Length: 347
Image 1 (cartoon, rainbow, N blue to C red):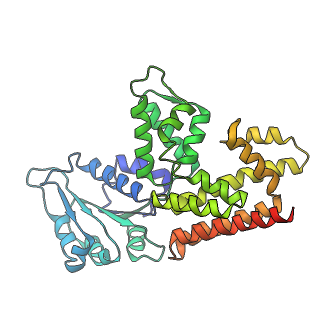
Image 2 (tube, rainbow, N blue to C red):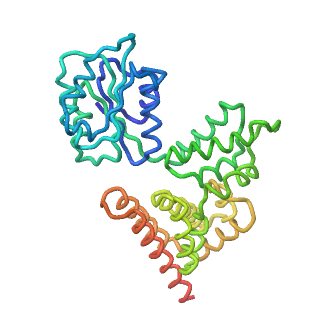
Image 3 (cartoon, rainbow, N blue to C red):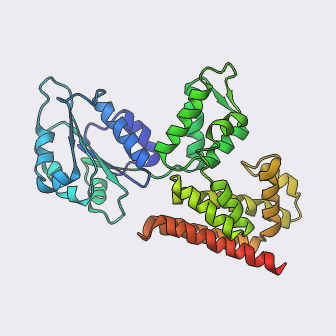
């Protein structure tokens, strides 16, 4: 069976007892690890318990595919349901999982951390089609999911988040759940002893400004301004500091989406100021606002439409072609910047 995103949290809290094994996979390594741990803890809160928790690598199962079914059937010496964690796992674990399906008895829960499995993966297909197995996809958080994550984490600490601060934080957080959690925890720790229980834009900039953005703002500015030398430097900084190519592509998409929204409104005779006010996440003033206004003037709707198609293709290529993600993101930025530079030269 396949666990849909809306079902994931409920399943993690109370796994279906009929399910023998869960394959957790996707391009968000942090979320895969987080959910695997949460699922294991739902069965055995102490993951250091040697009598109830077993760790096996996928490579070990490749050489001994019968071991998984054997572990599934073994009983805990001191009682309680057991957890078998398989990590990392890939196609080498298919035979072991087939043996698990065929096992005659056992009540352990097998938690498999499968990485970024393609739709053609035998491991993924087995988990999706067998009644006693489950597949749980974990893909990078979208904007709405990030907003919910930030707000729920803050609420749990008795904090509120101002709208401008929330938009700024979401724009700068990556899609990787592990990195996102780290950045949110850093912000909450900073506010823990502050009597002012609201996270402001100033708080967010002070704590996350140097690490969460990792130069992506500079990449956006250089790309849409057509500044090729500045773009090359900004890209080098982003990737040298651990920036994720898909995060960068999505940041470009958000910027292009906002430009398109404002330009479309203005092209219909609407008020540009009103459209900019409605565009989520835009600053009310300052250099970032000035940069956005410059990009609205420089990028007509036709070119924005073409750029959005190119950005969408780049994200698909990152996930499906097997080509280096960084190379795809660099090529996209260069193409967009070259378009802006050519348009500027014609003016």
